[in-house]
Length: 173
Image 1 (spheres, rainbow, N blue to C red):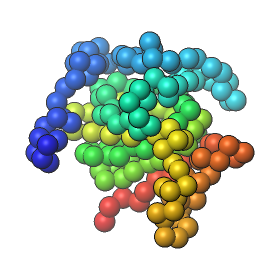
Image 2: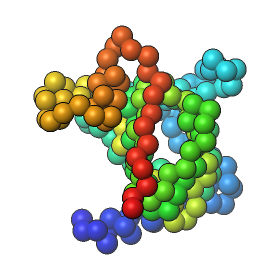
Image 3: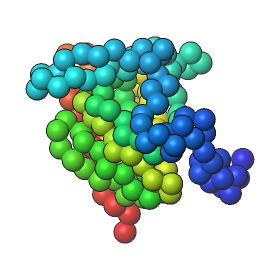
Image 4: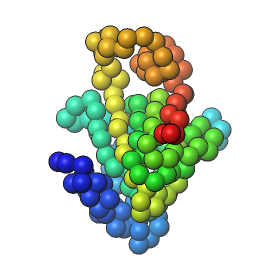
């Protein structure tokens, strides 16, 4: 697939987006896949997304985020990376509103409550989700020095640490 084909694929409407563009309501195509409602520490309902439903063929799963409806507050048991391919999006992460612009990346640790406001037609957000098993000692051996990303991932895979962090890249110059 070349860049033009990828761009056309990402901008095309999928079945969920066709419904969401008509109704403006979130189509929870993940409900049969393990969304569970839990109570957060701040008293709001949070949908709990379980990674076991995404990783039937490996420890990494990639998808385009559905546009045209809000994604409700949720958290999960895997690391999520959002890449803003085109346009922009607004998210609320751990109670703080942030904005991703084209070219920016946001990496979320496990258990970080977040929601995403409805994306418009030209707002293309790509999700890359990873199980902890994706990060081996070989993976970390490839980092030449310590830095914010390697420190973040080392914390994320540690079982004795609190998992509530996220990082956002600066906008491209």
